[in-house]
Image 1 (spheres, rainbow, N blue to C red):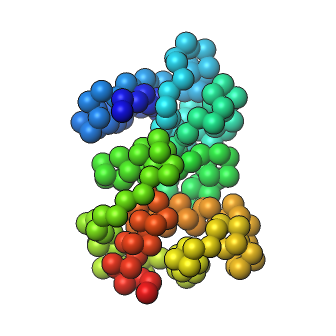
Image 2 (spheres, one colour):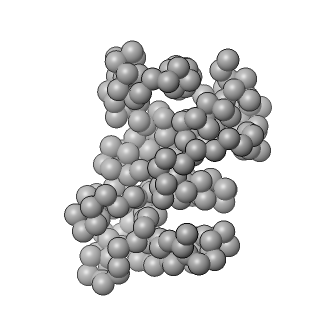
Image 3 (tube, rainbow, N blue to C red):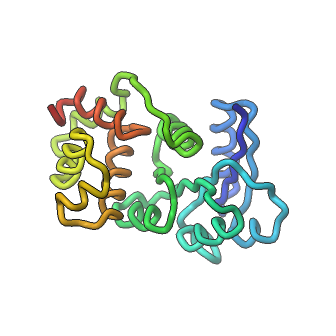
Length: 204
């Protein structure tokens, strides 16, 4: 189905490149541009189906812009995108209401997967592990001990709340670990993350 996406980034060349990338996968996608949250706030841009929002913006930064975007368009799915893919930045993004996070260094398939997941949060796949996931297996320490613990509990079918109780951490912290796992395993859903992890021998 055709959809619309709003790109908010203060680098025009990056926005143009991202638009070309999106339309190479979805030719009928409608792409809107803005270089700041202020530009969006004072424009008549129609409600998009999804937003790709840069963390570091001139003026109000992306993390603080999430609340304003949700004031204008409640329940709007927002994916944060940044060259800073540290766990702290990912956690902040999710805590403030983003539905996903993509590093600017990600390949096209990762960006496409993030968009599909945002547009259809119930999306599941039953595909084989991707090349990126297979490459992960070559890393001597692909996941932290805590991430492996969270992955194990996901494999057991536990919810984020149940995992938080098991590990004595907050539910938001669990959400952050889950998002990092999805990115690391190049997955768009918890079930796909488990499927890829099994193929990689990370879990039984």
